[in-house]
Amino acid sequence: MQRVRISSYQAPVHKLGDSQITLSPKFRLAALQSSSLLNLTSESELSLSGDSLLPGLPDDIALNCLLRVPVESHSACRAVCKRWHLLLGNKERFFTRRKELGFQDPWLFVFAFHKCTGKMQWKVLDLINFSWHTIPPMPCKDRVCPHGLRCIAIPFEGTLFVCGGMVSDMDCPLDLVVKYEIHKNRWSVMSRMLTARSFFASGVIDGLVYAAGGNSGDLFELNSAEVLDPIKGNWRPIANMGTHMASYDSAVLNGKLFVTEGWIWPFLFSPRGQIYDPKCNNWETMAVGLREGWTGSSVVVDGHLFVVSEHERMKLKVYVMETDSWETVPGSPVPEQICKPFSVNSSGCRIYIVGSNLHVAIGHLRRTKSGMDQSFFVQWQVVDAPDDFCNLKPSSSQVLFA
Image (tube, rainbow, N blue to C red; front, side, top):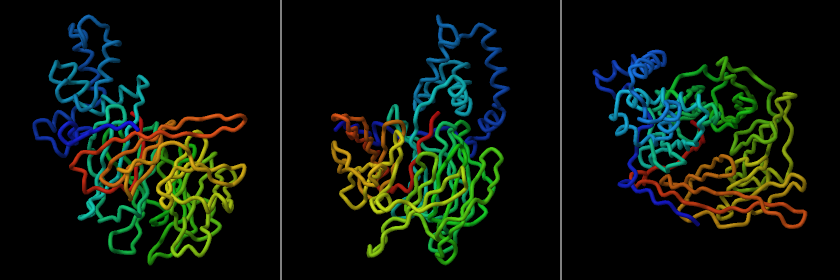
């Protein structure tokens, strides 16, 4: 098991981008004027004047080099010259240029809350350099219960949605929707959901954001569902679920939304599960083996559904559709540093588990073959969080690329 130590001294928490709210008046004016068009004009003028990005290299090659500079080094590097300051001094411009040239590095966005005060905050882990960063706070007026809302990402668009939720200490669901764009490093308020809901199922299919079920006021369970078109910015209703239910977990597999309510104490009844097919706008009942073995937080990797179980020593399981059964994935166990509560996400063939205190376990999955049978094998790597995170608990984690 590989282990990476990141202490609060060795790897301080950096700002992913400077929010205009925190800038002094002198620099706030400069930030407001730094539009893409203005930046392009300034850079062109500097280029024509003979200033090169890197002496001895053509600008296109030099730009490819500078766009690989880790974000935590930008504050020092942008003091080198005016052209470096133009590129590295504005994160919107930096990430936009990376997107234009096809750079797509993964960032793990962790929605966390303080275990004593309940204060919510986002922490961002650079999955290439293993450095932590912060982003501006969400524009949320209400004191929200961090467990009730849902975070949904469109990874390669660099976009994150936070939907619904519940006011803390009240059975009052919310219809609020906010969007974060990593290329702009800013939040914006979207059109509200058609129905206020908390603890609901969510997922992205073909670029559309789905929300289904959940709790309404007084904890009554919903059967309604809706879908958001992020481009048009509007919600529309879809077919109602086959039953009223809140969601324990959900996943998108083979273009369908899978929803489970999970096992409920005292475990007398088999959990319910529903599957939505957007092509025919129809819900169907989930197979028995699938819903009964779904005992934790799920991710989909290479077209297979995996679950990190909450009840079986956090072992990793994979669902076998042909036999409607679950199999334990062999390999090293989930590292002992990862404690409940935890959240799970994935990127490529890697599974990310964020545990209490925001320690992160990275599971490297690979296929194994024995005769005609194929299976998976997992090896875990640990990234220890800074000491400052010792009171933080994860509610959700999402991977974005930029």
